[in-house]
Length: 504
Ligand code: MV4
Image (cartoon, rainbow, N blue to C red; front, side, top):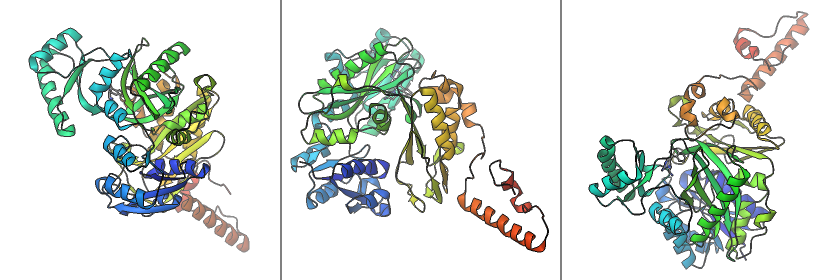
């Protein structure tokens, strides 16, 4: 039985995993980099060990050191979270060889799905629909010309070792073909040390819809419905929701079935995600499979009522799934907004630094998965995502309104955040109508970049307290001297103009 888990990650996902460990009576071991001494996952864990310096290569990717800690602390299993070592087959293999359980699929499944062309071939063999295109890498320039002729423009050139948009080129005409091909090849070679490139038909304005799957070691494979992830910017997801506004019961049934088939084709074990492109005519195509827990998993948890980390741990323990496909339902609607420490007014540059104040939204239907606290300094070495805000309501319309309410309550000072940008997304007609695809952000750039200023609950608690103390003092002085002057003097006039500030 798994009694102790090392969480090989940091930030919100490390805390997320440890929360379920605590509920299951499993003790948790944190690893951390030197700059992360004061990080929340270190505070939350039962034990914590420093594994190196701030750069990920020296700490969170330092598999040797991490395995040394795992052995020293006698853990039964390692949870890799997402990013870092989560999709590293070599690491999964080493963990297993030490007699420690890797909370995830086999190294073979990671390898097959990690190579896009191998995954594509596997899907074709198993009857899972893929985008029309080639099965093998482009051999040479003559082969490319012949292939593109048969597929037809526009085409997408993709690096076999790529993923998440890297090493990808859209080609619309013969003139651009050769230069794009050479660029794709050299980019792939530089990024992945593998210059294999293949050809796909380009799907115009697709939706990105993914299916959550769970597979146990007893051969049970189920899906937990879809997540609509089309609101993204430069292959970074920004907002996710479930159910997808595009989905119909028939399409869901067909896609879910193919997601399960994709998982079965690699003897998948654990939690995974099958990504599809969906065009406006409801044609869907396998894109890739992520062999880990995803950032956006909480929206699935919210509508299905299932704890995905608990499922992962039970599966790693060799236990069967606690529910069947037929027992699962989608209850209501959930939306996730990713809160980044970034400045959307400055080309979305990361905005690390000291959190001076944070007030998180609470109340009916709200969940936040975060890790920062007042006085914490966000390091610049890692991903700038600081929290995920999840709103649930019985209907999509109510979930959007609830999300807007929560974004209004969310106050973070000290660093710039994506909260104003997310508020504008919720206010965009195309989003509200559920009529959006992967081009949503670029199509609505003007309104999403507009200024909305500070309007609502006072941003800065310290300033609010100072204002109330100041007006109290003036009032006391006025009453003792028998005068009744307006306590708001010039310095506070701007502040007092805000509609919600106390009036005297
Ligand atoms: C595509 C595509 C259109 N046609 N493939 C982007 C990430 C990478 N995993 C695959 N991607 C795409 N592949 C064909 N044949 C459009 C995209 C794409 C995209 C996909 C999912 C989510 C957002 C996207 C944004 C731009 C392009």
